[in-house]
Length: 57
Image 1 (cartoon, helix red, strand yellow):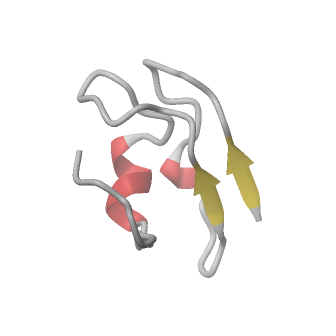
Image 2 (tube, rainbow, N blue to C red):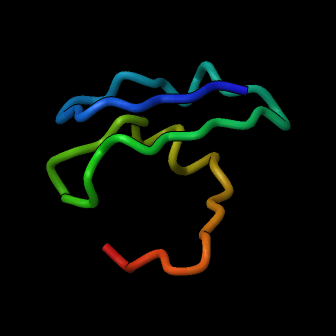
Image 3 (tube, rainbow, N blue to C red):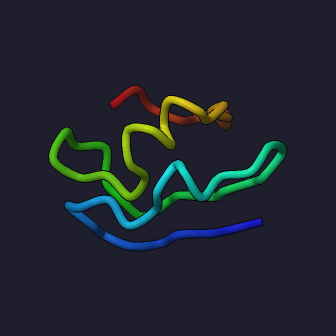
């Protein structure tokens, strides 16, 4: 399990680091187009989990 909690405008987690079945909590970047903790490759490989009360960005 990996966790990130950072207000980053640049990607700090690379999808190439992900392994099958790995769990990543990425909670720091606000839902804005110019903020992202995980690069595009990582987001493409991810399955996203939403919680009750989550808002669409």
